[in-house]
Amino acid sequence: MAGVLLVNSNCRTGARLLQDRPDVRLSVITIEKYRHFYDPGTDVELVDSVADLTGVRLAALRIRERHPFDWVVAPSEWSVQAGGYLRSYLGLPGPGYEVANAFSNKFVMKQKLAAAGLPVTAFRRLEALGDTVEAARHLGWPVVVKRVCGGGAGYVVVVRDADHLREVFAEDSRAAMRTAPFPLMAERLVDIEAEYHCDGVVVDGQVRFAAVSRYFAPVLDSVGGVIGSYTLPDHDPEARLIADLHTQVVDALGLHDGVTHLEVLKSPSGYLIGEIACRPGGGGITDQIRHQYGVDLWDTFLDLATGIGVDVARAPRDDHMIQYMLPRPAGTVTAITSRDELLRLDCVVDASITTRVGDTVRGPVDSSTYAGVVVMRAATAGDIDRSIAAVDAAFHIDVTDPARTTVPAGGGPTP
Image (tube, rainbow, N blue to C red; front, top):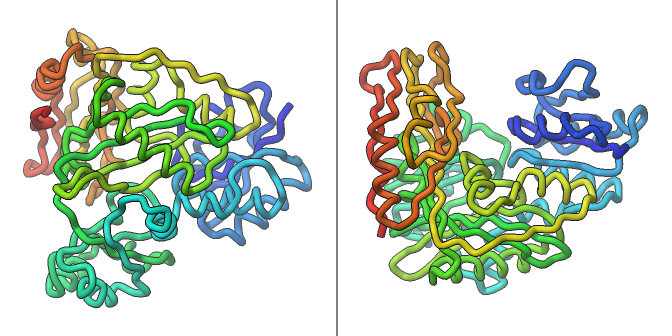
């Protein structure tokens, strides 16, 4: 039986799947907020933050005294660095700290990609928010200010000018970003014509699988509304170009084995690498890939992270698989469409509703906030719009704040 240490924050899927593996003796490092992810009797050490590398190291050493482990699994964006640090510190297999940092620290990531000659937006490190004005002198207004670590769009802010900088960071909703113990960075804001994701599997340093999808609209513009994407056929020229970029990024950052999620932006000047993660993508992406290609990215990720060999095979596809993240406005839910109602639509392959009547979410929402996922198959590009429109018409969610009651708008026309 393999001794496995899971370092995790908010990744429920990874937590559940590892607990369900009969050949794993599991120990966990997490925070109190997510203790309920784990069954009674699970060996759990709580820390204040999985981003606190010293605290995680001490917790891991306590665990090793009672339950030695040979593998470290880090499935959440917040735990990637800690996982790499423990592997390097303890001499365990898998991505070490340098690789994990390159895949989770956006500033270091951009440094390495730029050094490899790959296309990225212009960027600068900020020692404090006040440095944004000086950064904009070099980058030009407007700029995007973000934390270099962490996931989701909630810690990404577009700043138009110096006055807007003071205004936006005076808001109570930005307190966490103002005070978080993480470096900041600024990037030049570019006009985005389209945004894509490429989800891959890397084995022995070689990309064995790469699937390219196009978002309905750029993610930063879609927060609070509909976020989703559709796979591109293998013969699509953009799919080939982005898959090639994915291979170059993996080579530049040095991943030997793992699952990747790459974001690529299309601007008037060409394609730009947004960022890449060494974990499965969020939302409905893993469902989308599983239904389209028969590749389970979560099982593959866990196999590679625990030393189990994988054989990833895929057949070419000419159709499209759509993943539609159902919007979840802030407030208390008073009514929501059921899964069964969505499954009655001819285009729907699968659906899940994760929000219930009575659930409350306080704003602001970000790209990780959604009410569920609908997966649809579209035979042609024209069917993509029709499928999106069908879900738009079928799905309703009402919340207590009338201003935020949502009947989703369409995902936008396909090219």
